[in-house]
Image (cartoon, rainbow, N blue to C red; front, side, top):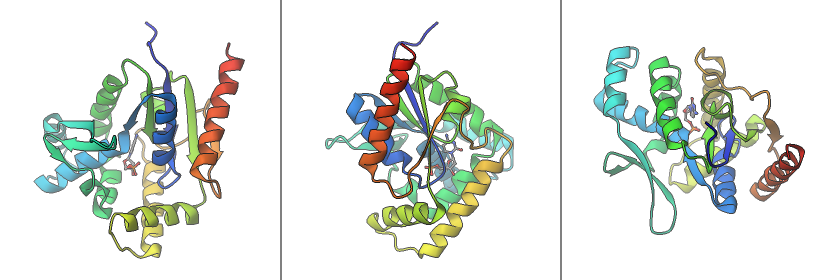
Length: 229
Ligand code: DC
């Protein structure tokens, strides 16, 4: 059975600008926005708090079945991430959670369960979903697929600025090393590794502003709509 609403997927490595761009597209087209990286991060946070052995599949599975992850908007319209009743939006951005989330994302049991949750969230369509495997594995039937990339230097700078804005003062070289390590882990894992879908539009965002990337995406969507009737 065909879904009702449109599905737009935005994948790519850390710091390629996916989050900001996906939010802007969702706002412009009046679609819901789902940040799947936040889901991996929330599982990592819970694993860290519980001190579980992430190499033990049973422990991981129990943790995932207990994790209640949800997204809610605050009164300013900003999307917040919840673990049960607790707002974990800021905590999941900490560098140690970035590292752990990338490790946890290599585990099949984690990917299988989060994929079910993500598909359930996207069931009705009318969504922009952002992550690493949205167009390839989770929503392979999506209407519009994008893959954003950028040079490492620029991605590190963007991430460093984001962390700075959140009050975290971290050395730029350290941010760069971490991004390289996460890229390697996300691309080389055997389960749903990061790569562009065959039918994705690839955009190099190096040197482009958010507005420019958003415009490229909207233009590509218009062109695809015309082409596909
Ligand atoms: O996009 P992000 O930096 O918030 O994602 C955190 C980690 O989660 C990232 O290193 C890889 C993993 N991830 C994934 O494997 N699949 C997704 N769809 C989203 C994120």
